[in-house]
Image (tube, rainbow, N blue to C red; front, side):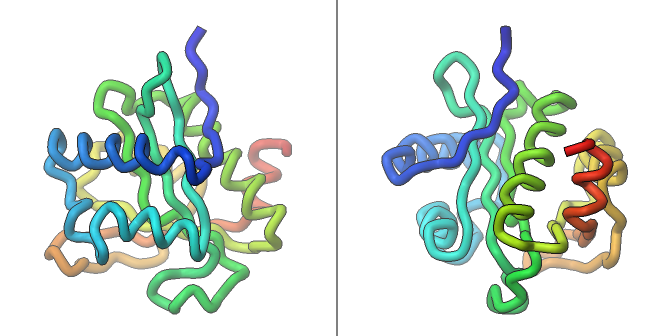
Length: 169
């Protein structure tokens, strides 16, 4: 039976997380290396302002989601916002609704425990239909902008209460 669970990464997971992100960057041409500090900077950021979740299949990481307390664009000062900064799923496992649902539930748990009221994130407008349809079930688009790479992004927002009620948590 497949495990659809997301786990909190620990310091000892750093090498596996880095290897997965490098692999995804190379295989999917994602802009991970364009992030400030690159992949290592992303992991460092999570140790300072948030955390990293990961999902595994057959002992291999197949998904990583990094979050912060506070929005990057606001220097992480608005601590009532839980922000998922980046989610990368191995293409062979994308479109798995149960795994996606469990990720949202895990975020509700984390952000509820840390007294965040809002959950925000961005996604590329060009994402496949599945991703934006999924996000539309849980949140509202509050802005559309062009990022530093010239890619159109949606800004999504919802509340912890709304998702807790939706998931009956």
